[in-house]
Length: 300
Image (tube, rainbow, N blue to C red; front, top):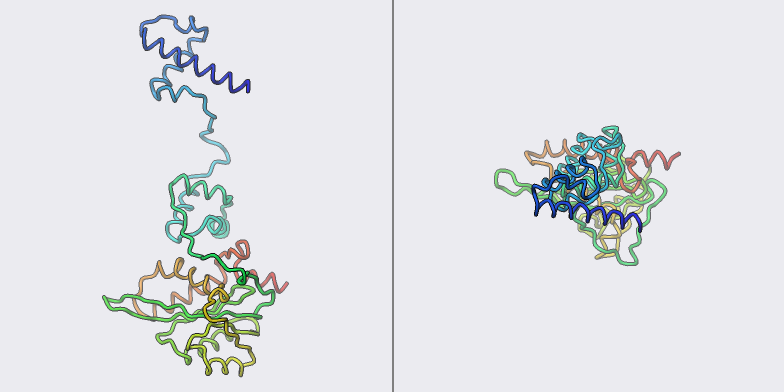
């Protein structure tokens, strides 16, 4: 309390000095009348002339060159990652540490974004009902979620429809992706064979929705290959929530940055994105580890 009173009295003294000087601009040795050093008086006058009464208030000192100050180059990388890839603050932290050997706290990233008036990322996830409590399997391959993402591109003014078939392992988040020009059971069967060859572990159960591409032919193909096929309840896409969430990641971090030219180019870029997702992309569920790093942790 004494400190607050002293600061208030000091401020009132400064204001009084400036008011007297304003009324009597030729007043000599006003500093002697106020009982303050000459240098202090002229320091107050300079601050008053530069910033008015607000500048006379005592403020917390800020070091201009603090050894722990975040460097401009780091600030630029933070802003570029948000602008180019729409990454959240935690994912920016993981990217900086993994790919640029820069260690920075999540709170520092948040402060940088706020200071530069960067808008918050939109929240698209809806509120989950009580029966959809999320949990993760601990055994790789125990549950693999499969779904289809509908894609629309524009090539020279004409609309191009494509279908991304996606499989994601519940335990490790390892994914397999493949694009088809048609949405059929034949392609769904071909995709399952691709997933079996791609995943580095045996698959126990494949879980899908009730789409027409996952009906009888697909079902018996899965069962004949020694795996179980499980349908989720109609109208509950949240039960396949991990693959649904991964499709949102595809849209934000891959497709919105993609310019469609032809299917060959699209498949090449998708293969690169699949490898990046599995081996290099930090994952929020594993505190910045990649899916294959999570697999290694589970196996050891």
